[in-house]
Length: 141
Length: 141
Length: 141
Length: 141
Image 1 (cartoon, chains in turn brown, blue, cyan, green):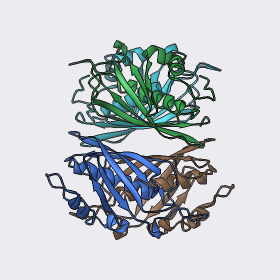
Image 2 (tube, rainbow over the protein chains, first blue to last red):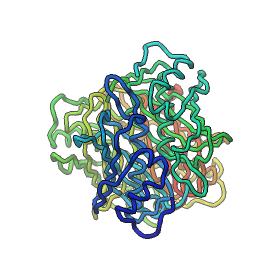
Image 3 (cartoon, rainbow over the protein chains, first blue to last red):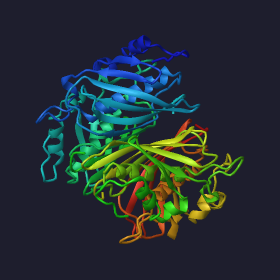
Image 4 (spheres, rainbow over the protein chains, first blue to last red):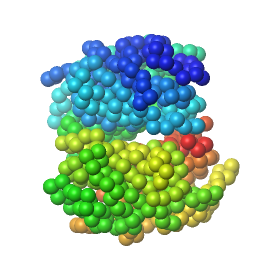
């Protein structure tokens, strides 16, 4: 993906989500983009499941993917020009047993070298399922 | 997935990989299981791509998934009885531009409350692409 | 340190800070304790310096210590009964060049196995210097 | 601290440890520096204690400091020219109840933007007490 120098709009982020094959597969769309941060919505699909019994639970790696990308697009939406992800931390708080999932990212710092964001994933009842941080460098590591 | 009390063999881990819909979708298989640790192999598939130009690059969330699950199965292979993942850290070192990818996990500690593992992902030329750590609790968080 | 079953007051946390030799050496005191979270204040002292030229900068390990302990006491203040720290992540945003430093912690989840908190360190001008997360188990790891 | 362009020797690292007030206070010295990595030794002192009963335990923030700095000097010893620490992750495995403590760091990657190292802390009986990772940028974040 090529990131433009200008700050993208919500529609432009929504469109750029579709350039990425894995994001298309996840069925992502932008929820809202405000001064506070960026929201991305991920629907349920049967292939993202880890545990199936007694009820289906979304795989932690899928939540990690959602945390990673929502943070990156949030940095992008603040003009941070991320070249990718340098590192990421995730805490899992509760099992994700139904969709859609909502990820909300807040940029902590737009840095000269690395920008950082905090990201939170919520279930349809607005319960916190997982949260984390990503570090997005301006140049490839 | 139900984890047995006994320590699983390489074949049992390989089989249990197929119980998880997301692992099936990823096409995972056990490489080898030794005293040193566990190796899991992930083939290439077109939906796991993030950047497509100038060459396809595997999505960081896919690498995070591979790190998460390889650490969990490594803990399982040492009798750690993980109930899931409590937390995970990932560092991205180089872009993953070709497959299959090989993940190798080493258990740092089997704990009463949390077990921890280190996980490394290599490309076909054995170059380190990403690495990280996972914490796997004996009971759900 | 022995943690009581009941939820401590601001004064009790302030007093318990003095039981810990390293906290005494750091000169910590509770700023405020509200529904939102816990604030701990750390004064400047010459031994906490890393870089000395062109101006003194607080050592990253000191900021890590402040993040760790503020998260633990925040969990304690919500009845989380932490037995210690299981893991911690820190992002460094800006150099800490003057004191006192203010750490503010917010509990993300009081868990049965692990409680998690987010912690932010600010300089006297309220600029974010460092931030992170800690995981605090109910029982020793 | 000013880092020279050339790769430092074990004695030069040992000397540079003394330039940093907090490192002087900790009483650090280089154990050994090999192709494998860097070892730094930290003695016991009464102010680094967290829990005092039933036996004294080193504060997690002190272990975090040791992890941070050993990783940074390891990157320095490989020519990585670190400008500081961008981020750090720590896992606590066992309580540190006696000294001296030995930290061993291994560089995972010397990057153009960020270099990463793994660091392990051992007690006098060579038991793993804590471990973690640090990311060290070439330029200030």
